[in-house]
Length: 264
Length: 95
Image (cartoon, rainbow over all chains, first blue to last red; front, top):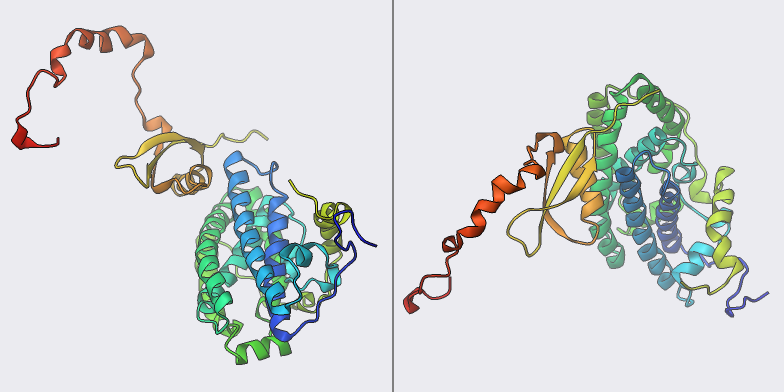
């Protein structure tokens, strides 16, 4: 089946090397979280926050584009960033599960953004010295962006946690739901090991102390209890997803799949 | 449930090329820190700013538009206050 724009409509299959898989993981996480944030556009509790969330979504979309472009170059078969974003199905996506959960209420979005940014800020800082020069350059840009995401989400977390009875209740509920998804941030499989070995990826273990410090500081200020150690969700890195990702991709990919080559 | 409205803040931005902060608009925010962030997200999306000030709108005392006459009209007849009646000596150069 070929599209009106002459491009294939069908799902593509990449020949993945560990390096390609690693870059796709980062790209998919950025894109999927960007899409979840973009779902707030026009729905945020106030206009200023509508813009703030859209700004964060656009930062992540920019990161995703650079990472997909890099992934396409690594694969070397002439595919575009759009091919990688729009022509792969859920089992081929390798994003962190925490990124694909539905946007929930505002507290849920803020808690997620805080947790993810508290991890990725130090992660990108370390990735600036990656032996993969393109990745190091992307990290340089992403580090500054995520520093602001963390500042913004963290400021809200403090105000919601230490705010009204309702904001506190919603924040605690969000934390309960989201905490089991934080284990995946630190997961290292064979791909991860090879990348750390090659000096391409930072070791998430060396990110942990900064992550913990950030949360200690924010949770103390927000008067929130640190979640107790619990069983952790896993699967995203292998393409095993929650039931939510497929629905999200159906919305996100509908237009380019139905109208291949569509332009503004 | 009735919620208290968020306080209003006036936003001033100093641009890349400007020397002074200029009023650009206003934002709603619960406190000063969030007002700065809201101002950043609302008014510096296209690389406009190098510095932001936020001021609680309630802290601004404004003149009454009805006082326009007594406040501003008397100056109209005092053209000698404009520095256009003096010769500037060559040596002073560009002012």
